[in-house]
Image 1: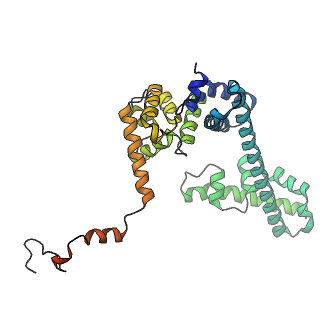
Image 2: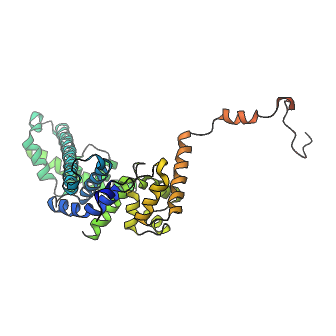
Length: 183
Length: 132
């Protein structure tokens, strides 16, 4: 077990903190955030260890390093999750806006299209699975962007188009039907 | 901790230390890039387990004024051979210095050429065997 003296010795603090705390922090945080991508937990744990190791000789109570690391890692993880949420809601808003515009252009049904309830119905009724929902949410984006979102980025551009076009065609058909039924 | 979690933590430790010259991991990553090695291969080359390779990456870069002491502490802690660590650090730090200095300027070459004594004439000496 490393002493505080060893922890503050120049080249090794992060090494000692990693050995002593990385596993327990990871287990605690993955348990608490069981639905979160574990990669984000690892990132938070390591960032906390590196941060604290650089400040270890300035800490008031270095005895409670475990508690301190937990708090710092938790804060970093929450910060990361908050930015993810913000990004997702921005994307969703953008996607919703694009579909609203497409509907407006396609059907000329005026103000009603902007109605949130209607848009909600569009997403619910037109997209039958996650892939279709993703394509619908990013309707105005390029094939390249959609391919990335669907995890097709390793495919050749032609292959990406071949995969995405039928989905777009399917959704266009359903969108037309949806609009016809409304008229 | 599961093996997946351990591998995940190790990968992140290597990734995060590779981004900042504060850590030995930064120099290890540069060395990997220059030598075309992945972490596993470099660890093997250094005779280290992946666990100790990650600990090595997490060490702070030795200070110039405490270089021997810091290198000694790192070697004792991680098991890396001193000669291997010093070679990687020196090589990568020198390459970085060269990059930071930028390419040699044309003026530098011209100044070197002008070192010839002025009384030796304006024409360069004829190449051996040249009749032109």
